[in-house]
Image (cartoon, rainbow, N blue to C red; front, side, top):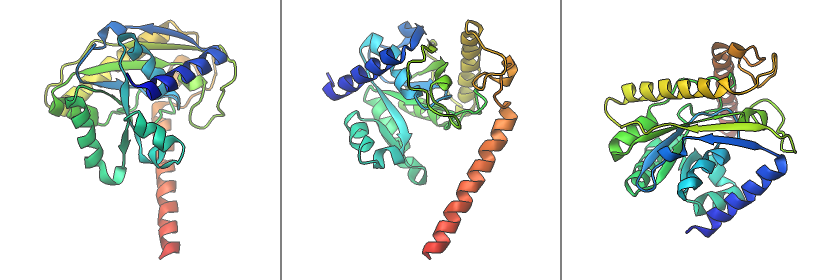
Length: 252
């Protein structure tokens, strides 16, 4: 029993009800009732981590999400994240984050990971980092693939949040466990292929208005292609690096 985590979930569900969100969930029977596992989730919107926890409650468990350190540094969200035992990711000290995740997995926890590392502007699956596979292999636990579709309509990168009553349909699918076998690169490729197939399957049952910003170009939408989105990400990263360098120079 985790009263604080459970309370936060209750608050989130109240918000979802107020927004009129319509969830369709399939495959929750693939989630283990006990023992560690990596939950690998696609990333199209800022609310993905809140939605990803919904199927897990079917087996009365909680997910320890890996989240960037800045969220833990915030005076409001930081204490909440630590109380719920989420795992901070400090890119300047990645080994510590990795070790904490492996320890949690070995301790029987479900660890939520976004293998794309950042929101996909194209709403297609970006290339995956190998961290999820390496953690699963070292801890000796399976990877549970999970895909979410529709969350980008609520709040995503580059667009205003829509947290009012939108009645947005959101589909979530949980796949069968994938055994964590070496090498990590091949396991990562397997997880990516599996999740891409699952995502396309979810999209088949979802209405996609032509030209809508949240619809992938592949489906006739206004989102950038994966290649275009990757270029935008690279340009954004370069701009951030330039700003950091300028700030460091000013402080010298």
